[in-house]
Length: 128
Image (cartoon, rainbow, N blue to C red; front, side):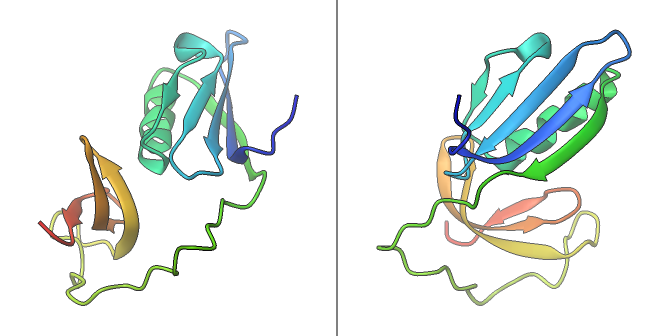
């Protein structure tokens, strides 16, 4: 079995012996769960899905064992690197943490540029 499609892996374990592996693929949005109650589930929300799954499993008694990068993300030669547009919020209006630019954010059937909080993950689309 090859892992050339995997960008980052998180491994969790439960006291009862159950183990869960969460893989974020190199495309930056595909997420695959192996083990636990969501065994075989796929998600296409990228890092947002990973964060929600980690919170869900931690609340269910799973403990993070390790996480590590596997491969570099995919690069597309025909795409120019994303530059941060004007209008960045000074800080998150919800929690006050820093805000980062995400060139290809995906949420609720919408994809595009967004400002996301590094803490609470509050978000604001750059264009309407």
